[in-house]
Amino acid sequence: MTDFRDSVETLIPALRRYARALTRDTDLADDLVQDTLVRALRSEKLFLGGDLRAWLYTILTNLNRNRRRSLARQPVLTELHDTPEPSGTEAEGRDITRALATLPEEQRAVLLLVALEGLSYRDVAEIQGVPMGTVMSRLARARAQIRSVLEGERPALRCVK
Image (cartoon, rainbow, N blue to C red; front, side, top):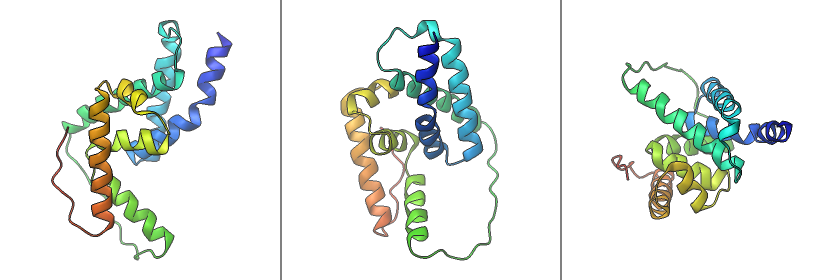
């Protein structure tokens, strides 16, 4: 029993990194990770072995989908910031963040799981609950969208596959 909890604990930094990249909000990401951990620890008996990391990412992904569905029913409030334009690597980092923001949720999640977390296409397909071909398609579209935004082209209309 403690082996399971120790294994879960070692994966917390990776869960936080993925949640922060997915939600683009530190506080929301921390709440999402906490909910994931609570759900995983309560469901410890349901884990039948296999890849614990993929199982936790699946829980996190499903909780995030549920959160986004409930947010879709609420009005969106946006803060206005009056900040000077960044330069150098800070500007490049913001460009990448903006490019990621143009991606549909499904494409961004696949890109983050493959590029940031280093998961295989098969693992990502299991986490997302889609065929591996869909993962490959979403990844290719995400990469193309990121490339076009970074090269200064206008973002394409969001198309979910």
